[in-house]
Image (cartoon, rainbow, N blue to C red; front, top):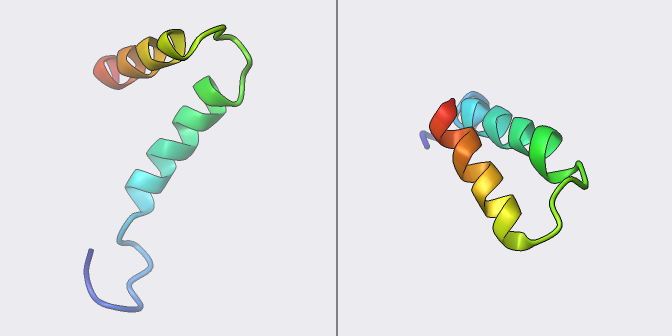
Length: 47
């Protein structure tokens, strides 16, 4: 991160985490924590 007042510091990371939440976490598709972990891992590695 850079100095105070730079609003573009984390924009790419925040967008990435919002996309993961929208596509994987907010959807009730996983039954267990392990299934969620594997889905997130596959999403990140396939990106």
